Length: 432
Ligand code: AMP
Image (cartoon, rainbow, N blue to C red; front, side):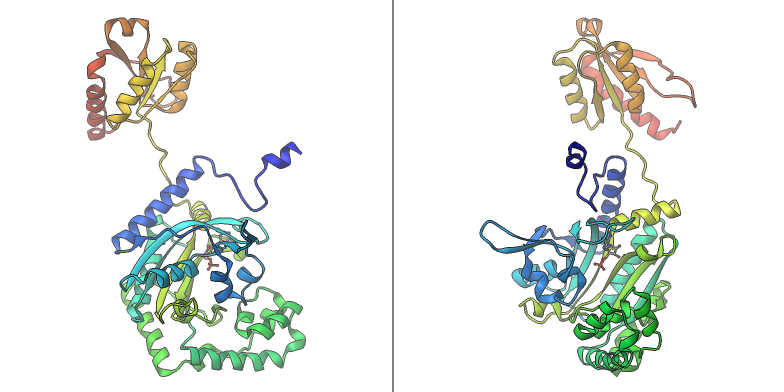
């Protein structure tokens, strides 16, 4: 029983250092990329009224099968967010900010999926939305943002698949043609496929089941149903990608089941990842969403990327090597009491990173700990130092494979920060 209680729930993980540092670093990189493009962060609650998702995604697995729903103590139906586009559109409808609203976000999402490598029940996403413009250049801008972010991570094996779902009328005509097509092949579909057909024939195109895939092989192509205006929008986006030097492949099977999706839809896949979990991000235009949630009709375009998946892709490509944070000082305290606490506090306030020992352990044990910590210098404080108002600074730099050099100097207690800063600055200028 004990082990069952210690383990995390299925599909979730404890992320310890250094893996946690990579997540933070990747998220930070995304924040920088987005802020540089004029996007600003929005933080919405991790749980919402379930209706926010139910209203717009009833026909999707994410909402109908995978959502974590619960009643709160007042019996309101709540949901842990399975994605962030709907909450952001809700926030937009609620606050009516000036458009175009350019926002980015990060944080955990929850889906009751079958866990496997790269597929979790709690996973992190970063993403961005541009709400209030139907300019095809806005689609291009979002695509560029997602693509350049992958490049910044050092990913070279990511491909961009893109498609257009056209206007609502184009979509409806396509959906009805698909419906008739699959109705003629009812016997070839999987049982679940037949159920999907009844709800939304479009969704059969992204079914992963082999029978459905085979049945879909000769399905009509959305391109034949695009109005002149929709085809023009799509072509403008593709031309922009060409001018930006961003490679893409048109994938007519790339559809989004939700009715609020219009025009551009895209996915970023990593060729370095296993087929079933190779999507590192996806997005598109959702001109109907804000209105569906009760706001004024407002176009929008955006994307979300899976942080955990991106990191798996980085691992597979040997990219995005995060340097572990260097530690400047390890305070070795052989007297106990408050002195080491004061010393560590003072040097941290001066902007120097410092760790320290506790429990008045032996000098030898503490020096070992200092060595393990990777600190650049050890700062020793013993009875002699205390009496003479000094501290001892010991050089912990190692020459490959050897013990720390151990050169040490006594410095006046009052000059300690100044001296450390001076030494660190000299080294920054002349790397070892
Ligand atoms: P979606 O909202 O389904 O388009 O997902 C956007 C991105 O989030 C995907 O491309 C994945 O990288 C990531 N993602 C989606 N579901 C999961 C999951 N269960 N575990 C890990 N990452 C996920």
